[in-house]
Length: 111
Length: 111
Length: 145
Length: 145
Ligand SMILES: Nc1ncnc2c1ncn2[C@@H]1O[C@H](COP(=O)(O)OP(=O)(O)O)[C@@H](O)[C@H]1O
Ligand SMILES: Nc1ncnc2c1ncn2[C@@H]1O[C@H](COP(=O)(O)OP(=O)(O)O)[C@@H](O)[C@H]1O
View 1 (cartoon, rainbow over the protein chains, first blue to last red):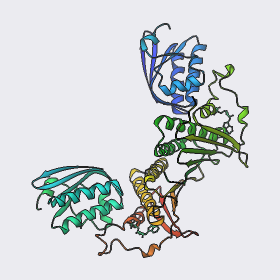
View 2 (tube, each protein chain N blue to C red; view 1 turned 120 degrees about the vertical axis):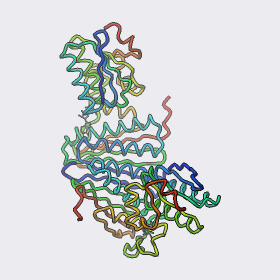
View 3 (cartoon, chains in turn yellow, purple, cyan, blue; view 1 turned 180 degrees about the vertical axis):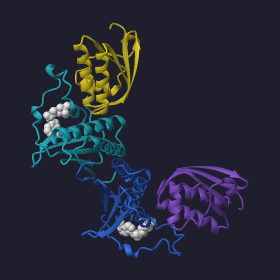
View 4 (cartoon, rainbow over the protein chains, first blue to last red; view 1 turned 90 degrees about the vertical axis):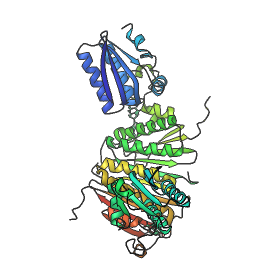
């Protein structure tokens, strides 16, 4: 997995690509979010448009990222879900837990 | 396998790429050489620089192309052997049977 | 495919480094059988999830303990049987990932996904106590609605 | 790789359409074991040649007759055993492709290539009369000169 970091109006956008799966992918996401929170960045958008494979551990990692950020008073939103990721989140009733956007400008509002 | 045909000074050069293996690759080569001989083109160069896989059937097909052309009073030369193809021909003592070139201009001489 | 079933079996030590091989083999088989891209994706994911469970929960990632992954390639369905050398578990007893108290847990969704994406899933304990998960994906998907 | 051997077995009907799968599996295994690109190429070719022989000469391309391809993945060598359901043959009796009268024949080089590129090759007839070819490629090539 590859993660590129951008900052727009105090919001950190992580442009992720590749796989979020047990091992490398999940660890990279965890470290990235942990570091952001440590630095005090609590407004996070995960851009998942280029993530082509997520397994159950990856879904779990997205949930962890969300809850950890929320617990520290921050907000983590998801941007550009692929059809398959949407299905994975939908059938485990997580689509309503996350704030999900298809448009970056929309996602940037209301943090 | 892909075969592109060029003609330089009455010599037909077949620029081959891909695999010469049992089935598709060997059949394509056989048809191409058969058609050339039927049309009266008896000066043939097989440019094998982009051929990345040859199995024993492919080697056999190269031998057949060579003998068929020779039997009809023509000449078939090989151009740009990969290291692996060179090894395959070498250990089966075929490297001396074929006229082999690394330079197209040299190959075009003396037909 | 031939008239009779082809079988492909991998017997691997419990090492997550083998997952790449498992996925490559799975993709080759589904590709050869003519599954569409989406079905192939879910089969891949189900085999991956179940192999991870067998290696991790079943065999405790002990590299000496084996996981057998058997593919039975039929003309209109793919049957996959994944067997470990662990102590098994009762599939009825695992927490429901959709229950409100589990919704935000970081794990516990693997088997749920497998059940969702495969046409048939059965759990059985082997004579040695290990788990055997059998799953079937049909080539022509059944009409569910 | 784990301390103990991993095995991967394909049991396929005699249909040349399966060669792609056979090659994909072979490449995954040699890649995982850390063979260099050249060794992996020759292993691929040897498995391909031997599988074709088993399907064609052994089983007469009868899709009902099976070819078993077993990979035994050791820490420092790969053992491959290819078994068919044909009538076998005497490996001593096949024509020498290097003999002058055979040099320009269009076939008869497969087994010669396998012997050239693998570190050890053995032929044996099974109890059912079929052929079993066993070949070994070592990870650290032996010094031959
Ligand atoms: N092969 C197995 N052997 C023993 N226990 C298993 C096996 N597979 C699954 N389990 C049990 O079922 C639980 C749920 O598995 P799963 O739905 O895949 O989620 P997760 O692996 O994230 O916990 C596991 O936590 C484990 O307790
Ligand atoms: N599995 C097999 N069963 C029966 N005969 C075989 C088998 N493999 C090889 N042979 C015999 O050995 C001969 C030489 O095989 P090979 O060197 O691969 O060249 P080719 O396949 O081009 O003839 C074959 O022509 C065939 O007669």
